[in-house]
Length: 117
Image (cartoon, rainbow, N blue to C red; front, side, top):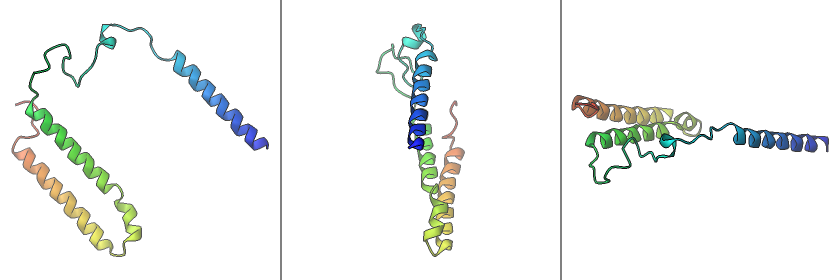
């Protein structure tokens, strides 16, 4: 019973401190910069018909591609436990990394990663 009260008291203290900090820590002095909308580095007050740069989209897609690569390779060490043929796992992962590295090299050679030309 003492453990329950200890946990309850801890939760109440933590929630109380968090509410106190959330209320008093943020800066509550709005200015024109803070209250204006921010849209990915573009001026939101201009026309919405301004075309985007193709390089912006290319870099964004490359970022998503390599972010997905990390997400797919993240469970790789865990798969060694359940798959009996570890050589197959290593071969497939190295093939995947080499395939993406060749694609990155191709983009680099063709100038796809040059942000300003």
